[in-house]
Amino acid sequence: MTYITGTGLTSFGRHDGRSSLDLMSMAAQLALDDAELTRRDIDGILCGYSTVSPHIMLATVFAEHFGITPSYAHAVQVGGATGLAMVMLAHHLVEAGVVRNMLVVAGENRLTGQSRDASIQALAQVGHPDYELPLGPTIPAYYGLVASRYMHEHGVTEQDLAEFAVLMRKHALDHPGAQFHESITVADVMASKPVAKPLKLLDCCPVSDGGAAIIVSREPTGVTAVRVRGCAQAHTHQHVTAAPPLSELGAEIAIKKAKAAAGVEIADVDYAAVYDSFTITLCMLLEDLGLAGRGEAAARVRDGHFSRDGAVPLNTHGGLLSYGHCGVGGAMAHLNEAHLQMTGRAGSRQVRDATVTLLHGDGGVLSSHVSMFWERER
Amino acid sequence: MSESAEWTKGAAAISYQRCACCAHVQYFRRDFCAACGSLALTDHAASGEGTIYATSLVCRAATPETRAHVPYNIVLVDMREGFRMMAHGDQDLAIGDVVSARFVPFAGATVPYFERTR
Image 1 (tube, each protein chain N blue to C red):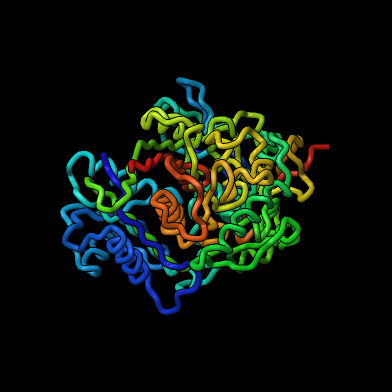
Image 2: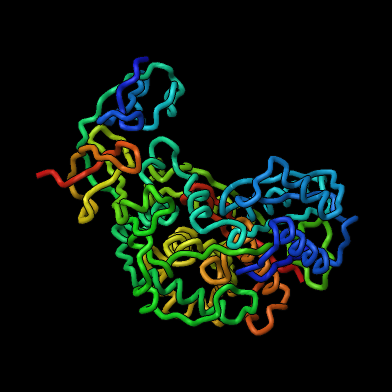
């Protein structure tokens, strides 16, 4: 049995003058305070990567900087799935008795630490160096390809995709830490400039500075205990050229295994934290995970199913699309929000009930998947 | 194992490998079959004919070299020989179109470019 005892999240957007280590430290301190633990209680550290400040030993660089001498530490790299992959590893290591309190942390000054071109270029490297990169693809283009095919097979329209951007923005309006605070409409998304068709600017997450941290422990520390019920991964390919058919993508494999590991069904889920790098990502993942029927996710958004007062509130902080995306920490913001919701501390964003949460992360081009269930015990 | 000329090395050609043991076809060149591990691979020149699987028109590029070409259409093509490849293509290509390849210069390289077969 393992527990989520604390989470920390900085605001996303511009943090002028802050380094990746600064942002990691800010988030880590918030998580420690949240868990009512001190540096001495932390005996394990898992951290993500920083494209701005790459390092072959980022976990020990951070440990020294933050002032921890852990008995277990290293970095993890699974693209956008890194945060959940780290929590999964933390869960297993804590359960195995290797670590008592694992600090999982990531942060990056991706917006102010490098040019937007540099960010886009660094991320495009998930493509194949010989067979894809000479063609000048970008991350939006990889997902644009997937979007064109998904729309073709399932009758999803650009207006449908726009609904997800509008929902995430609506949620972000209620979070003071979100990068964007201006309301948008479907028409705004449709009118935003094309990036990689069919994806337009407002279909894409922004580049942000920010940090996030989470602590996985053997014993609960707070009034409300949130435990990890079960999790699983699936990795079907790296490059979009080598991806399996849409009907055989890893999200469906990962969620099937996670449901079995957790003994949970989708019908039990009352809060969802799902990776949303692009509107198409969120649309496909919701349908792959079974949170909506095939081709029906947009209709569920319109019906309020995923709204704060809906049946399964989704990314109530605004997601990557509107809270922001600082790399590994970006997808960890979903975890922070889920923890706040499950412990009844989400303030004006609080949902009616968040007892069983489904969390899902995606790395690469729908290449790597981690599905996880959390449950509130008391 | 002789190496076929291919566009990734500057030639105006698309090539692929076939496994003599399990008949698996692979596009990303390796010394072994990714399906069964066999080293008995043969090189083949592809016909350059296929069907459009997906498209995305890139309107925002990330480097000065590629920005000079914006907008350019990136396509995934299911080739007649049984492998999928990424390439460039005409901007009005649609999923399901039957296409054939020629080769064009792009950002200092030679890349395959697909257009509808007449």
